[in-house]
Image (tube, rainbow, N blue to C red; front, top):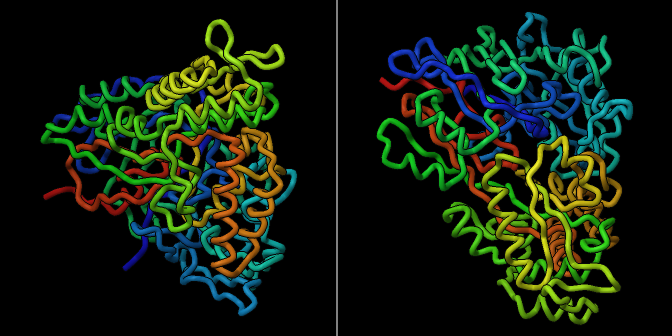
Length: 529
């Protein structure tokens, strides 16, 4: 059976605006035209770039591009641009891929091994502004062997390397003559995927049309419009009014569509967690006692019940409870008495207003969250309420990412992270000290030698037991020295018009909407008979 997927970008959130109104779906569908062959979906953000050289689609699921491999519904690796899974040398240092025959980019030019080599070498080039290049640290060399074979040589055995080859491949004949950081390819992409970017109105919508020459067969859904609507409530309202066929929604808003016979709700479990970054440069959040007390004060179970309406799980670290890499025994309940005791022992004494003080410094800091994100807002307010019970003042403020990003070194942020697959994929960029302040990597500027050592051991070891021990050590160290307050792992909830067959969901990463959701495989959908 031919593997066919939509790949969509993980992207940094930007300033977003409401989408212009579309015609309601009544014989013609929300986006206009035939409702069986077009769909309009409301999402909360838009990409900064469509270039994989800068990180677009790095985890797979891009509508425009394909990687050498892809993941199926169960996240198992399957061939995409490669005709089969790689041949791996006995020492684990060489991976050889043979390309699928006859694949062409959407401009009609053939895919060759040189395109693959160009893509990886450019991503790894220090002059390319790709903050995710550390994920390919194991790669020593990538070379073409004729037109249809690509050989990767690694510096050290890296057991999850094959999963890194879902990275989308770009055409050298177009991107090769441009500056990868500023070239037109960033907004005018050409790939081998099932869809083409047909239009992009910044802050409003993106339109994709089916690629008639797609190697997996032309999709039956001919047009996908992604309506950029930052505010969760507005997105729900537009879905209810018929402006949208589907949308990403917080659980409590999704439940309002439960009795709608014309729409179906999809719930996907995820690695996506919400956490508060605790910058080490801040006089308050940089104090280990404050960080430990906040970890003890937070009521995670209440957040799952009240904010997520049960659609999620408490987060006791960056890995979800049901993940095989989760360190058993680190689960913990809210402990306000313990939080107060930690602060007392560290010299933080209650002031006249109940907020603790040490050496003239009040236990007070600002927590920012992106405006319009109701789930993050509710997490932030609940966190502030719990912290105050321990004597710590958390001042919650909403802002755009343009305001938040320059302040991340000093102010706490209600952030979202989480990568599917191997623990190295998400934990290294979240925690390693070498990546402190590198874009959205290690936002807390966390620096813990034991955690760094565990990350390196987990990345380089071939022994599953040794890797498990390393990641157990890391998770237990985060309990003793938290650089983040981990709150919840959230389920992703989607509501979509019930007009197509073939819809499924995957276990999802943090980035969703474009990258995931029931439309991750829209090229496989078929109109209901």
